[in-house]
Image (cartoon, rainbow, N blue to C red):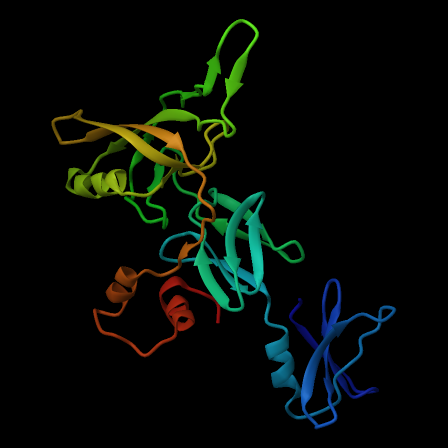
Length: 287
C-alpha cells in the first residue's frame, strides 16, 4: 500500500493514493471508522470527514513491507507486517505470522537487493565493500572486518551420489549432494585471530563472499568442513584456507540488533524501549 494521504473537499473524504488500489476509511453504524480497501473504476471511496480520520489513515497506510540499510551492520533490514512470506528471488527471507517482524538479511548480496511478498516489492541495498575484502560472517551476518579474499580461482566441485550396478543400471539419491569448494582468507591483524576461529568453528552455517559483487564468485551460505591456518609474514599476517560445503537454510532472517550490540550502544544500562525503538536508535531504522 502507498503512503500518500489526500483529502477531497468536494466529497469530504480522506483517501490514500496507492499504485494498485486505494485505501480509505468509512464510518460504521456506531460512528467508528473502519478501513476498506478497493478501487471503483479508478475512483477512491470511503472515509467521511472527521478530526480523527488522519490518525486512522496514517495507521492504515503503514507499509506491509518497508526496508532500510542498517547503519551498524550494512545489512538490508526489513519491517514486515504479517501474515506474509517475503522472498528475495526464490530465496525465503522470512515467514511472518500475525505479527510485525523486524529482521536483517545476511544472505543479501553486496549492492541492491529486491524483496517481495508477491504483491509489494521493495529494493534495499547491502553496503558494498572494498573489492579485495571479504564478507565472512556467522548466520546472523556478524563477522570479522578487514579480511582479505585471496583469488584462488574459486574452485567448486561436485561428487554425484550415484551407485552403478552394471553398465545398464545406476541409482541416484533423491536429493543431489551439495557442491563443495575452498576459499582463502588473509587476516592482517593477528589480534583478531580468535574472532576468525570463532566464526569458523561455530555450529551453524557461515556466509562467505567478496565484499563487492564479483562475476563468478557469488555470496554463499556454507558449512565449514576444514580449516588450515598458516603465518605468512614476520608481522604476523595469517592465512586461513577453508573447505566448505553448500548449505541452504530454510530462511535467512536474522536480528537487526543483537543483545551485545544493544548493550554496547546503551553502555550496559537496560532501557525502557521497544525493539522498534532500539532499531531506530542503534540501526538507523526510519521513524
